[in-house]
Image (cartoon, rainbow, N blue to C red; front, top):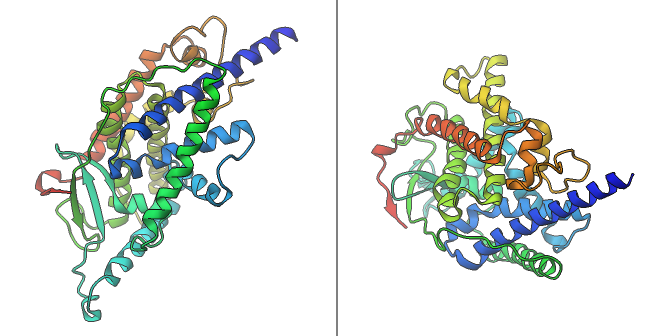
Length: 362
């Protein structure tokens, strides 16, 4: 009994330490990064942090008016991991909504049927890697009308709620436990390039324009993985534990989305595409994403999860990987995870004709 109580205390201490480390990483963003595209793109991961902390503590600390917004932004991370048919309906709904909003901005009614408007903006790095798009951002931020003059103020207030929560948690931790040092490789970043398009028309970005919703499905997953690779990694470096957790979560749900697509194609006749190129990554994902480890990556709270052992606790990431994967070490697992992410991304980026796209500066 005493042994179990001591282990429970250790598990709780490690949980608190991981939360504190994540708090410091997110605080470093709030303190240093001013790029508006980055601020929007990082929101689901900040919402995941806030919601997971509140779930662990069993109490809601943010204003009740923002609870649902935080939950919805957090849930967006896993939205395409549900049934593929449901994902496509969501994509079509967002695209249709955005299309109508942009058409409504045309000055003359007779122009609305000309299909001359642009209804999606895409964001890029200078070396032509897609890192975001306006339809995805509007979806996960729950923006119904992107031309609402109150949108800016609403998003500012949402960010204010997250910032206040992070600052409060950081202060509370500092009173009882030493603050860990989080090293940022860079202290600023700028997403400067864009390309606008009309999803109703053939566009040079897509090799196959016949499947609009599927193109957007692949586009959104590409943006998620590229944001990790080309924006977050250069900021934090490969050893940051919060980044490791986020990479695991995003890679898992990308893998899950492809798995759902495969299941849909096998059981329906309306979508016939060759998914053989994804066979290797689906096999690799089946090995990496075992449930015991996945649960402690998605949520705080290591107590009674069987992921902490005394003999491994001094190892990187508190030996959780060694305990869950029969001695496989953190560095080896991280390498395998990033290798899987890179393989998926290489396949996805081949679906876009980026060389023919002319980027413009924001």
